[in-house]
Length: 137
Image 1 (cartoon, rainbow, N blue to C red):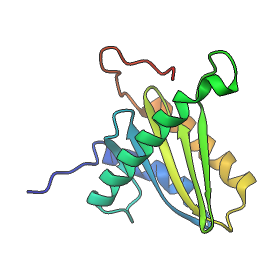
Image 2: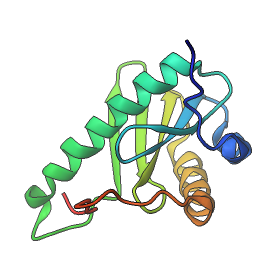
Image 3: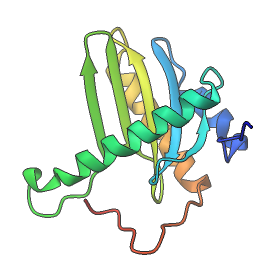
Image 4: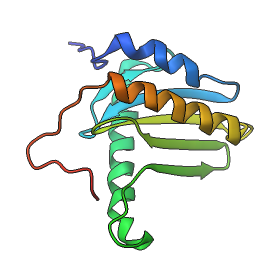
């Protein structure tokens, strides 16, 4: 039995703005790792897997905030691989956007575009925190 993991398909059009040259795909996820929406090139099973992985990555990054000083707020994580990058960016209350790119991506314009998209997404997202949920570490 297949379930539709994309809870907000009407937001998919916003992700079109991140699909610059050298951007592979993008996923928007809730803090608990559930898919909110994803670019059309990602299948349902992959969207679920990527969202779970990105939620774990966000949690690990947030746990390291003390390394950056007293009580900083997590905003973004960047991981570099030999074949590309993963950007994970806060995208609204308890939601995040993960973007996969090749190594050839022009980081300046790409990150500007990603942050413009998360601002638009943030105004559209209505994910509510679960009890005891906090955005700090």
